[in-house]
Length: 482
Image (cartoon, rainbow, N blue to C red; front, side, top):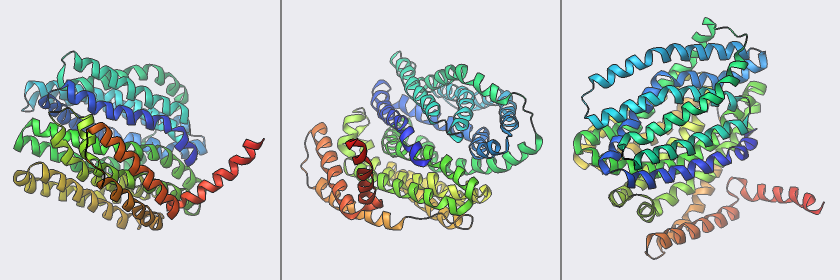
């Protein structure tokens, strides 16, 4: 199921990667640095509110759908979750309106925050439907839904930005496309719920599982967002725009790969664990972890090596130089964050010990708050990126140690060592190439670096690369001959 998901969600990965880069290219040019900073702050607020109120329902859908299907209880399961979402959704507009009215924000930021909060209802409801499809192995429909939202939200947001709507534009675009998708998605979801009943027992069970996940994600958002708010208070919205541009370039580039593997790996691990327990889980977990390291570790090193030409090519000139300094540090932090979120945290969700997951995130979140308040006033952007990278590293260590108390997921140490060794010649080649205009420099460094890593990884058989390659060729030869 994991490898089927990897192939099935590849188009989503490509679309998200392309749109993620275009988002940076387009919005750092269509928006002023101040407007881009407004967008960054409003986006952070939107994600925080979404996580606090609605993410627990999405987590419960992802974890319990397979179990409900095995027991023939899908209608009751879905009815319970959608009813819980509806009750939250009814009160949310009043709460959001009161927060925006009372908050001491300038008018531009209030408009952007209002747009982000309005988008939450549409985005959270469509997310429930997506998690149901992923859990049921409906790879094609889940992938299509992702692609439509990704491309459509970007297109509408870019059009609105070009019309001069400012930092609210990307958020309005995201809300509009999610609302349109709901028109086509909800009838199918309602058919699956037909005859189902809301059950208080299920609600308590799902909340007991999902609320700690939401709280842990809020702690993750503390790490991901505190730096922007502190920078805004100390240095102003333009500094936030510079930091967010570099952060987005590094984080989105890596996050596309992590999300792709998470889409495929999460449902596969749940299905394996529900069918055969820990023994059935070990091999797909090892495959996922090895493949994750093999793809993301060289991507992290590569981002750090080409940070300047990549920033000059993709980010608007008003932000590019400052953003380039942010990219290497956030790339390293993004690697720790991705491995933690999309692999190490599986121990807590599979074992239904989500309270321990919250404990694992408390230490890095608290450290991040302290470091930001201490370092940003003194070192500015440097302090923010140092705090973020250190916090994600501590979070990975805490999740590894505590996760082993729940489920002893395999850690591919051999793959990590071989992949790290394969990155060494790649780095030596790239740092010794000459500086030139950003486009030829980027393509030369990225191309030769990737080729060097690929050759070294093949020779070292990192992650079983050579072994799997020979097996694939042996499988394809008979088909070719036929």
